[in-house]
Amino acid sequence: MQFKMAIETLLLFTMAMMILISFIITGAFLIQPVPQNFTNILLSVLIVAQLLSSVLLIHVYDAVEKTKGGRSK
Image (cartoon, rainbow, N blue to C red; front, side, top):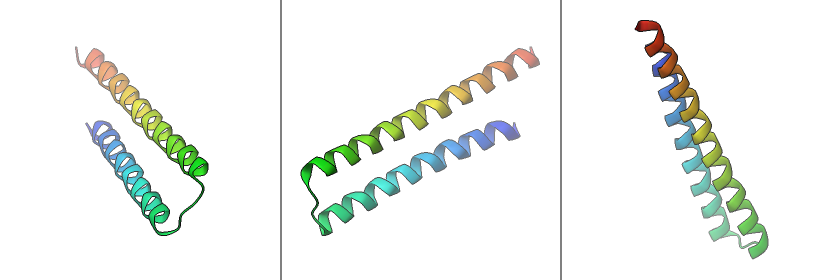
């Protein structure tokens, strides 16, 4: 139960940090214009990193749920 709560907290914290970072980067781009090519590359890298971290944490969470379910049964 403790581990499940830790994984949920980690997932929520990671998603919140990614959203915060994307808002900060977007705000910085609005204040200080940079070349369009650089903006596109950085935003695409950020989106891919966010998706990968979310998928990884969800897989870890599912694996923990399956092993805990197997042990309790």
